[in-house]
Length: 110
Image (tube, rainbow, N blue to C red):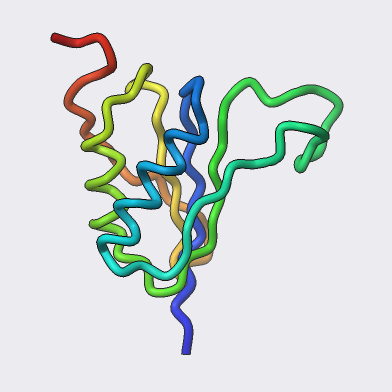
């Protein structure tokens, strides 16, 4: 039986493909079931009349090891670490929760 965890990751990176590749590599090392994909650049996959002003990665993972995902997010050098947010909704949860992140540095820190 599956244990699905829904994930929303908000960030401000310019190269979304690099973010997805880096996080997916960490998930593969952790033997996770699933991966992130880059939302389509053309057309909208969301509602509303305006373009989103943040980047979102959304996924549904079976038997996700949240510690593995969180460690990968915290280890990455983000351009704007203060804008990185992780929300998860576990299989038995009624709503999403904000997962606190501790990101050590940003791109450009020496």
